[in-house]
Length: 495
Ligand code: BES
Ligand code: ZN
Ligand code: ZN
Image 1 (cartoon, rainbow, N blue to C red):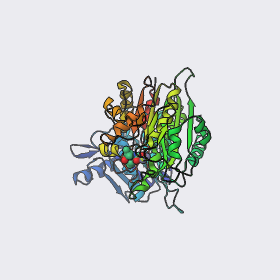
Image 2 (tube, helix red, strand yellow; image 1 turned 180 degrees about the vertical axis):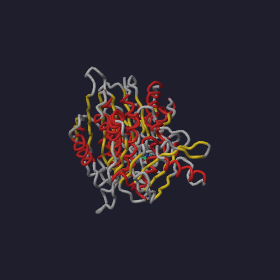
Image 3 (cartoon, rainbow, N blue to C red; image 1 turned 120 degrees about the vertical axis):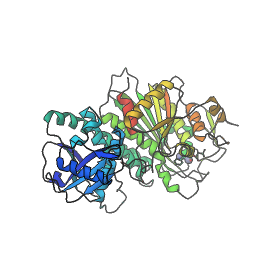
Image 4 (cartoon, protein in one colour; image 1 turned 90 degrees about the vertical axis):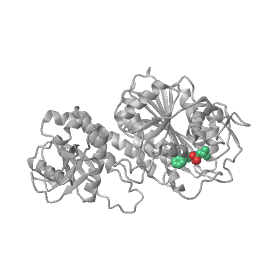
């Protein structure tokens, strides 16, 4: 895929013209400069074939006007908002794939009204096209997938300059998100914790992101007993991946990100049912999206300091695995009885959060596919987040509004903390009532973060994968890279 801004049409750009139409009183209209297009559009609108609604796309082969072979009309809906534009781009891209197009040229005049700021418009185009193009083909022996060339024609040199600047940034954000999606989509045998660490090192080359990796020995030395307990049922070595970026003076406290990286979660001795277990390769999406966010922040050169940590291992049943009733000790000395070995994410995160917290960052955000209960509560539309800090919650909500990703604050109550008290140990990894399962998990995690640090836990179990039917720029199956865009926005506005 390529997306570029051009000032003159060439032969390849004239294959197809993409025109976006808006909807008003159920009729379609556009600001496209070509009379022939407006005529076509009003005809289709009158005959109720195209109304400009979001989700509509019509491909007219043999259009043969204004130097273009085909015309693609795409609906923007009633209010042209940034997220509806991303979604419209998603539909446009799918249509072009269906029609086996090789290249298409976006009519700039038909999208100019979406935002007053041409740099932002460039960002939106770069980001949305890059996201829509993502396709996981690594595991196919032969890929027939052909990528598209998308261009935007802007003749005024000053407009082109500012738009292109945004376009480049949007592509970086899209690529970083797509890298997170790729990590998520990789099967667990090909993306082991060791391999994940190698991929991060490779991706960080030529960026300002510094990567270090800890293995078994170092994790033992660092007293990460809960993390190691989960990993010991597997033959794969656990890894902690540490990413650091300095974009601000050292006196500025860093933003800290933490990700759950279960490259496979079979449940351990509390084995999961067989049906659908293959989806548990996605149990490292918190890690993937942490990595994607760190890459985006570093590649965009945002003016923040960043520390990011990923705890990566497998949760398998074996003769060396955790057993129900076992007690492990976390880095901060708290003891945890393991009632259900399938509630392993919180055990891994406990130690990693302790470490992140010790560095006294400005804030901590973790991402984890932590609970099935989160999926039940919010489905695949919203990421649920938990925090005791109202101010920090507002900041994340603002970032979410900018990124277009839907997030929803969930309640975190002292009652949830009480539910996680252990019978024999300090804490239990499971509240036996199973009520408010994602909230009690969040309360458990809070036991490992210093109270003075603004902390948000994001449960992305519902939004990390298989949410493509909601957002056209994703595919039905595959990982979404959720929260990469939101956390990048958070870092962008960080003061
Ligand atoms: N990785 C799962 C949660 C999950 C489920 C993520 C479905 C994405 C889709 C997690 O480790 C888990 O197994 N959680 C258990 C916790 C329970 C034992 C308290 C769950 O949600 O059932
Ligand atoms: Zn589990
Ligand atoms: Zn899990």
